[in-house]
Length: 124
Image (tube, rainbow, N blue to C red; front, side, top):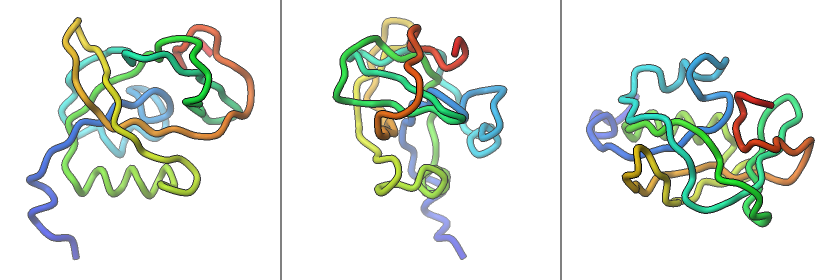
């Protein structure tokens, strides 16, 4: 049974792939408050196979995604989905939504697959 206090703590998560609206993993965060569509402040490389991989060590483009405010229980569910810290690892980074800067969790993975030139998973 989950600790009820985990539903009250809030954190920001920036999603760029299958957790975005309209994609198959979005159900995990659909009840969370969406702050808006935005982009990373820093440049990274976004790759994909059948799933996306955000690679931190190449500075190619700002990555497009959605910023959500989630409770701790949802963040735990996201960590399980992403295999944090083994498959993907979560790190706080600055993101921009409507020219306002936030600090949010972002999941990074290994460099694999094909580069998404636009930095937008929607345009893969």
